[in-house]
Length: 219
Image (spheres, one colour):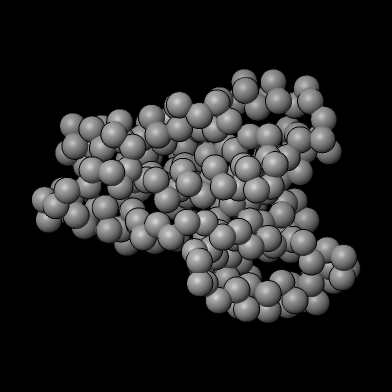
């Protein structure tokens, strides 16, 4: 994967999406979000970065980093615009968003604009992230929402960070709101359904479904 990043670095004026998360497991909600961002924001590529050791406690069973990485590879294999990186998996230690963004920025330099893709609820916690101010300088954010979501909180957050971190008024495009189809799919629900021996077919790619069942994950 890192070889592919280096290959991309030969180009200029890139728009790169960053899709971070535990992917525990990855499902169609993640993939639809990434594809919508790719199209709506005219991104060149989307890099999926599975978390190695999450900086925050996770609820429920956490599959191994290698299992989560392999499931993400399986899920994205058919899309030539999706890459999967081992940046965080291989560090074998807690890795914060700022660490990954610094690393990517050191590779791309000024050849790419980075767009961090995440859920609307997650973006509301950005002020609790490590080195928030630097994060805002290194990338823009795409906050994925479902139809009917009240975007007022995100707009209020944008106003607050613009004021708190001294961003100019024309920098209010640091956080974009992106509406996606109403997919009520979550990794938490999938893990729960597995434990209760309920069907998970059509909630995530067939290859991922087969992988986690074969390796008896989340039981």
